[in-house]
Image 1 (cartoon, rainbow, N blue to C red):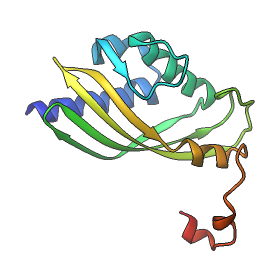
Image 2: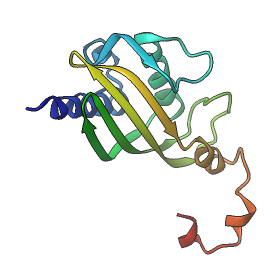
Image 3: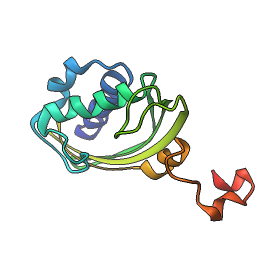
Length: 152
């Protein structure tokens, strides 16, 4: 297996085991002790505790959360990903009370792997689209009058 294939496999395991199954005990195996999340929410702890806290927040807010990897490319020590996430908002999320709404969102991420572990992350989740679905932000007026097939 090439180093790029190994890095992609580490990412796959993170999605399947940590995000989708909630097996936080493998965080130390998959993430470097010096891990830095450049996209962490304000106030989130750093390092491995931050990994557990952020994914724990998602699993609390969306207990049935499932991430699907739509695309993944590795070059050098970087893995670039496009992920589809979805779940039912049945727990608190970023200060929002549960809505019971099933929502879906996408996220683009870049992960740097060093010594067989994820050491850095930069990501851009579609929080705007998620908050629109949850009813926190009104749907933009420009999209509201268009047929639904043009909004997707």
